[in-house]
Image (cartoon, rainbow, N blue to C red; front, side, top):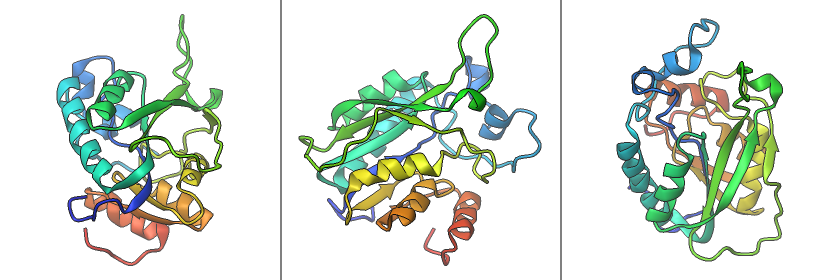
Length: 225
């Protein structure tokens, strides 16, 4: 992001590492492939950085990248960040510390088939999308729901991929000629969604293996890592 000019994007949609993935510190310290896949040997095994922090260091890290993301976002632009229930309070703090105006929280309903039942309790059937604006919210004529339905994909290379159709709904917030940015591009779901809408998009990914796989899936030539 340091190499990007100020105010060049209309919308940021991203899914950063949650650094949770467990109820206890010992679980959070496991590599992502172990935390999120367990014994599922059918999925490719890969790991990624910044997913083993405690809550204070994770919150500080979020303030750092959110502050930089605000710099590259146009005034009035929106940021939409996926998160789980454990880190939801920390993220809403961080997004305000970074200077954004917090606008609300939407729900990603992973559907009944997308999560395991819990004996004596409730399914963890939802994740969340914290959204905020760079300055006052601007009227764009786009109206989206507050709940998005879609099962977590299981046929993707990236182990924590989000549904492309949900990303496509969110990308509408950029406007017809907008430019979307994903600083944690992963497998490229946001880039695929923007392509479906025929709008421009830019993504960053620091993990070489994930980056190269995303290029192949998107049928893009190799770019500067």
